[in-house]
Image (tube, rainbow, N blue to C red; front, top):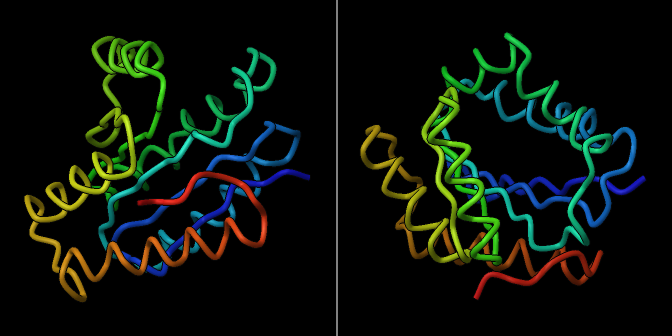
Length: 164
């Protein structure tokens, strides 16, 4: 099964890297991984990297994700612990479409559409700062940890472009 990769070594920034293909069971796997993040009972920012996804998932593939994101208990966890989420979409048209969705739908925490990792990282660090969440080290040192972990995952899976 193709799964999302969750990186928590740079907490309070958590990075989710989407799977190449949305296969049955990947949303449940993501849910299990994120429950461990919520169990920390600490506020965090989330970066979702969609760059490895090949093709646009159809309605059948998107439905489990939408159902999961819409569950009342999931919404409550996001509202309580997430200071915001930035989604990396390297296609400008897709970023625009996502931004339009945010105008029509009010998510449980602030949302951002980023062109690249740098935009997503900067936005998340600002959200954490605005929320008064202390970082364990400087933003640049934390970003270096994220970069190393993303490179490690790339070497083991070849799943996505590295943070530069």
